[in-house]
Length: 196
Image (cartoon, one colour):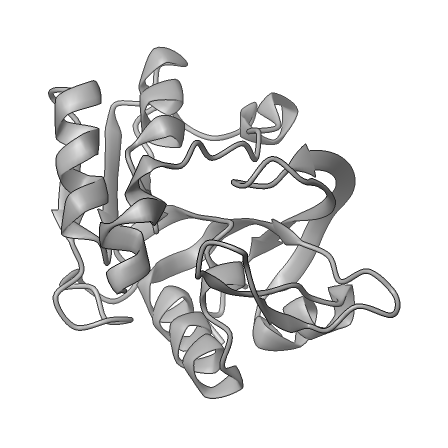
């Protein structure tokens, strides 16, 4: 976490929102941006007319940056990751943008996936955006400026959220926080109405 409160707090994040995936979402939907960083995606959602948007992140420094850059956003620090102090099934949409890349351990990823599934209301959506593993490259690596990152295979991401149904997916080229070209995957997943 030290990285995200120092050099990581100065980075620009680039994964884009795919607006067609938002078209059917009620503007009053309860939206949580988990790992919101400095609130970039949240600010875009508010501009698009969504009225109940909040965000949480493990980095107090990134949250402070978000409060400076986007006054008025509902931003909070995650006190005991990955747990968020919100009711079970009380969120309609969870955004998880380039967060799993910052969580290299399998056990920590599984715990995060379980927490996000807990938060989702039946029928709720998880919108995931993360980086794909390139053939021949290590899955977990350390960047030149000290971040420990992980890139993923598509099937690993789907296994993490095996209790959710795949609604849509897309691949896209992005620039990493350090300016390198990479391939990203975005998944739109839905919690079944039965809740399991």
